[in-house]
Length: 158
Image (cartoon, rainbow, N blue to C red; front, side):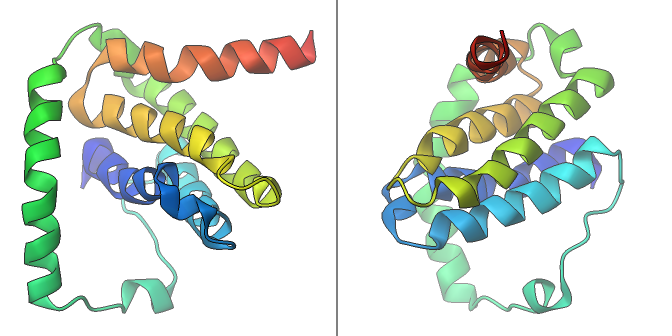
């Protein structure tokens, strides 16, 4: 599958938690744990993503899948126009693993942010941007995704 394919898998729960769905109690926790599980595997360099048997056994009706793909067509075309392969060294293996580790930490933080409605959406947005950067090999998107969380972390630490 490769890192780009794996990042597309992590992008799904990250984009969902960045949406207003995160206001549903428990939704952010489930997505956060899933993000942490999947992004952690990317961070350690696992070539094949592992999912719990119960999750990997879920079957989606073909009609639902076709509707979902049709609904995502316009946003995908927009992202294709906006992203380009630039600053590729920022999305090369050592740094892409660093972004995956940051995404994993963000996923672990989401269950603790459950008490503040929609606060997980901020982390979900940054995780989605990180995964989009890896998927499209766009270093400029990677900078936009990584710099704000690092600055916030530095502010708390120092």
